[in-house]
Image (cartoon, rainbow, N blue to C red):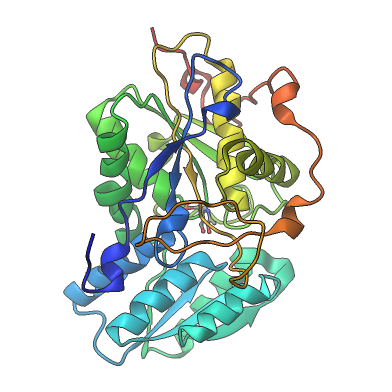
Length: 348
Ligand SMILES: Cc1ncc(COP(=O)(O)O)c(C=O)c1O
């Protein structure tokens, strides 16, 4: 593989089997390693697409400053793309995100504006809008409402999954802006209407970095409930437990939101009474921390030259001792908003 530019490395991430985490021997689970994008998460895809679309539509010109609320990954993706393309970037992020993220943004030349930590990502969205309103020279891309966000997944992530796993029955992903679920979900359903699209969200008021509960006061404008078949609530602690299992049993390193997606996929697999060949495809690898490079406990062993590592976060993992796969499965919760007919039915 050879590329003239680091932006060429965005997308085309691998699917890897994590079948050891399926409580149902008839159901296989695959994870899409989005952490292997050059900025370390799937947000590289949407950063590039949002910038390209803004350029095409004339909303972004050389030397402009982009402003974006982000809990980290979109900011990092945008910082990479903006720096390559010669734009300035201001990222509004909650003050309690990790120092490593801020440092990485600053290394890429982005300016970081901190919003109150207790207001979470909604606070960053509010402050970013206020700053953009007060300074019309700033260019807000606004991932929560930008059609380029789901489009990046519709044109990239979805077709990649379909290419690598045409027998897919269920797609599971964490819900943040909802761009992944909307874009991949639409694409997969167009290929096979019986594919189930399942969102994972934290309980209202609880934090899984990068994800949101739609009842927490803000529904992203790009969200379309018709694309979803079901939602699962996954608690922060559960996300970390499954993240640890992903590492321990499959030697796949990812971020906490990926732990949530894997937890959701395992719950679904447990419910599926029969499956010919039924992979669930959680996206994994969206790093939630950008630790210093160097000797860490990361077990990533890929030797693929084009990929960056996402590093590890042993501190986040240290306190997990319970093993959810030994509980005889975890009963899936009924979705709170989606009608009962949307419950996952095993396919015959
Ligand atoms: C680490 C991480 N995982 C998952 C997501 C959710 O993806 P999406 O925004 O496409 O819903 C996000 C979104 O910010 C994220 O930062």
